[in-house]
Image (cartoon, rainbow, N blue to C red; front, side, top):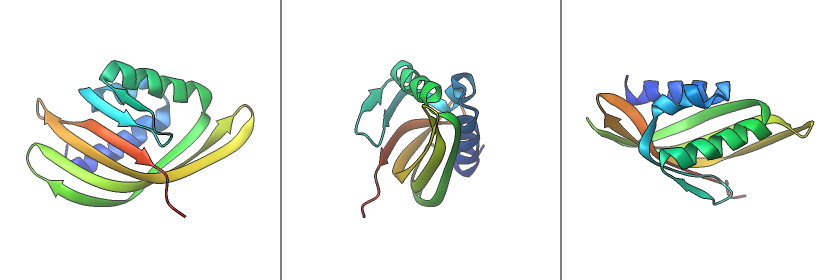
Length: 123
C-alpha cells in the first residue's frame, strides 16, 4: 500500500462507521485532535473518540480532498488536506468541514496513521 492508497482506505474505513474496519489503519501510538480542540492520545483513546462519533452521527458521509504532500519517504509521510462531512444527529441533518494535517508511519511494512489534527477553516 502506498501513502495515497492509505488515504483512500482510511476514508473508506471511516465511512463504514465501524471501528473494527478503522483500527488496522491506526498506530498504537496514535494521536488525534478533533476540530473542537480535544486531543486523544493512544489507540485506545482514539477508539473511544471515534466510536462516540460513530454512535452520535448517523449516516455520516466523510470526504478527504485537496491533498498536498509535504513529505513522503520510505517510513514517514505528511500531508495536509481538506475534509467535509454530513450526517444526522438527533434526527437533524448536520454538516461540517475543515482542514487537517496527518502523519503516516510505516509499521511492519504497513502504513498507519500516527497523528491527525483536524481544524476549522478560517473565514
